[in-house]
Every structure is written in C-alpha cells, then in structure tokens.
Image (cartoon, rainbow, N blue to C red; front, side, top):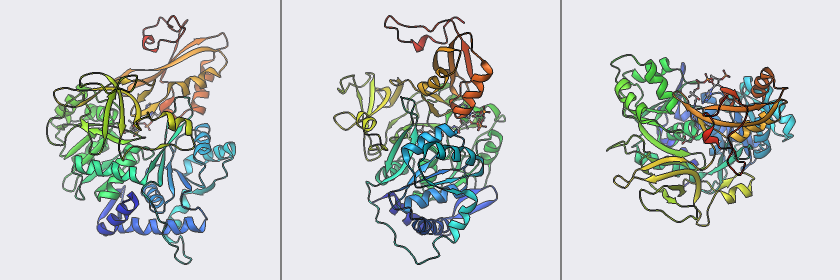
Length: 496
Ligand code: MLC
C-alpha cells in the first residue's frame, strides 16, 4: 500500500468530519479530498508531470496542508521550504530539488524571486493568492486520470543541514511516509477521535510528518496555529469540551509553557510528546509539576521519520527516548560497525520501512549515509539501558547544534563568517541554554578590520534566524590539539 492510497481512503471515510481548524475556519476531510482532486488537474494543465517536484514556501495554513496532500495524492514530489529562509539558502535548495513549480506566500516572494534568478532552476512561480482558484476551479477541462503511485516512488524531499554547509534533501518515499505514521498509530494509539493542537512549523517532519500526516492518514482533527504563542497555547490546551487530546512540541516549547503556566494547572491531554531535541530530566519533572502532564519523549530524524518512543502505557523514563518503534531495527555499533552489547556506547544505526533511501541528486552523500549492511548511520551516539531496553542518546558523532529543535551545522555558519573582512578564524558551537537547549555561539579571532555591524548585517542577509549566532565572542586564539584541530568542547572555557 502507498501513503497516498491510505490517505485517499481516509479522506473518503471521514467525509464530513472536521479535519482542520485554523483561526475562524474549519475544513472538512471531504473538502481536502476535493481540493486535492482539483490540484491534480491543475498540475496536469500546467504540465507538471508525476515525479516532478512541487515546492512551497508558505506560512502554516489550510492552503499549505491541501497543497502538500494534493502533491502526495497526485504523485508529485512535495518539497516544503522554510518561508523565512534567505535568498541564498533558497537558491541552494532549488538547485538541489529543481522543482517544476514553486508556490510562494507574499512575505517570501522577494527572497524566492532572487533565489530563482540566482539558481536559474527555471521553475514556474505561483503566488499563494491564486491557490484558492486552483483548488476550486483547477482542471475545469476534461477529467484527467489519477497516476499510478508505487510504494517506492519518492513522495517528499525534506531539507536538512549538510555537514559541508550545503543543504541535503532527504527523499522520503510513499512507503516511508506510510510506515512512519502507522508505527505511531500503533505505539501511541492514534485514532480518529483524537484532536491535535499543532503549533510546529510545517516544513519539517515533526509538524508535517507527524501532525499533518496523522490527520490525513488516521483521521484525527488538527487545530493549526500560525506559530507558537505560550499563553494562547495554554488556553487552547486547557479548553473543554472538544479540546485537544494530543500535543506535539520541542523542549523549548515545553520550557516556555512551564514558565508561563498558572499555579495548579492540569492540562487534560491524553498524550503530550516531545522530540527534535533532548528533553532535560528537570524539564520533564517541571512539566509534571506545572502542567500536570507526563511528557512522552521520542526520537526521530528527517531521514528516518520516527525511530523510538517511550511507551504510551508503562514507565516513561526521563533521559531516555524509549524503545524502537514497530518495524524499526536499531543497532548500536562500534567504529567498525560491529554490534555492541547492552550498556555499551556506540553509534546508532537503523533499518526499516521508515528509513529513506538517499539524498536527492547526491549519490555520494547517499552512499556514505548507509553502511555495508544497509543500515543508516544516524551520527548519534547511544546505548541501550540493560534493565529496561530503553535507548539513551549520549552524544553526537557529527558536529551538529540543535537550537529550539532546529538543526544547525556549524560549518555553514563558519563559512559565512570566514568570508568577512576582519575575521581571521572562527568556530561556531552550541552552548547550553535553558530555553533553546543549545544556543548558536560564534568564537571569532578578529583582525583589525573587524566590523561588528557588518557581521550582523551579513549574517542576517545570509542565514535564517535560527542559524544566526545569538552570541559572538571575540577571542585571541582558538584552543587546538597537537594536530592543530580546533577543540570545540573547550570553547566556552576560552579566555576572552
Ligand atoms: C526562532 N528563532 C530562533 C529559533 N526559532 N533562534 C534560535 N533557535 C530557534 N529554534 C529566532 C527567530 O529567527 C527570530 O529572530 C526570533 O527567534 C523570534 O522568532 P519567532 O518565530 O517568534 O520564534 P519563536 O516562536 O520564539 O520560536 C521558537 C520555537 C521555534 C521553539 C517555537 O524555534 C520552533 O518552532 N521550533 C521547532 C522546530 C521544529 O519543528 N523542528 C523539527 C525538525 S524535524 P530574529 O532575529 O529574526 O528576531 C526533526 C526530526 C524530529 O528534528 O525527530 O522531530
């Protein structure tokens, strides 16, 4: 079965029930079904063929959801892009994905036009304001036929930050998307009567692959918001009757909810899940005390969707990400790929129907992502707790910063800094931060021409907000080992 077939079946079955609530609007499953049908005919008319990429840079809205599902049901490859990415970032993603069509909201249009000109990828551009016409009147000409979609057909490309500073497009197939949501359906007992409050961005697998795909495939309702506001979220989560039963967040979101919760609050949620970044044991406890919820921590990534989860029933162990999800084969290996015993620390490698097959248009990165047994190298270090079988993530083999649930590769930020006059050397690290988990921090060895205002301006022009260093420390030297390699773990302790 494909994800598309499951979604189509579900949209038909749920028909008149409400799929989405957004501000003062509600959208029924039947309407999503009709919009997807019109969207397919619209793509046919534009001669965007099955297998071609359709990208979008949109703020969260029902139109984004209808467009994404329409792509998946029409066999076009959906490419969600960060609507606040800079023109340079977008140009690189467009060069990789080579979409035939890009749909853009007003606020992102200037950056997209610049990116299209720079990348010369030749995509059609469709402004968001014309979407409703495409959804209702699209394909007024004779009905076109639905393409045959196979389980291995690529369904979606999700961009992750690459270790060379260039973005990599993780390509998820129809089979991956289906396996991803069906594992959660079992593990978390997702069902059509659930109601999810969703404030996560919809250009990553957390918001889109869990939240929206759960609605589309399982049939639960989603109340979607434009972004995250702690007070409004607490009010929505407290609402009864018909309030949400589910909430998905990153630790930063739970941290902010805890901070502004009134005394004595007990949120009436069936399930509150945290992922995308490590949940500190103290935050887990604070959420019990201040929000009245026992957060369930899970582990996943763009390339694999969800991998492990604490149990729905039974003990949720703070500091662990729980047990492998159904269908996920998880190993802890040493540097030679040899499987280690329980309790021993090594790299986490995974196999399963949820695991992607490679990065779009990048054979070298795709090959090196897997070992000779076909296991994906997650780049995370972990161990299996001997008594419980729970997975503990103990570190990262790759130099990755996770800020508020967004991944930032230090090299991408360093490359921008190093091009600037007055920056002799630099190193970017994530320093511990109560709110963001890790705070992107740049250590710069300046030359006489160093100009702080120029640095700020260029960082703003070149990098999305979450990648920009919150702190820039000027230092006389960077700590190095005998081989001359920068010792990142010592930064933060260097003398200024
Ligand atoms: C926003 N800003 C951040 C930031 N988010 N800075 C550092 N780290 C972050 N995570 C910056 C903005 O650029 C802006 O800067 C300022 O903060 C305010 O912006 P905002 O939009 O009002 O931000 P806010 O609402 O505070 O965002 C916080 C947040 C958000 C936690 C809600 O970061 C978020 O939605 N995180 C979720 C990320 C996510 O979904 N990850 C899933 C990846 S998939 P300025 O300078 O412009 O004012 C994955 C797999 C898996 O990892 O397993 O889930």
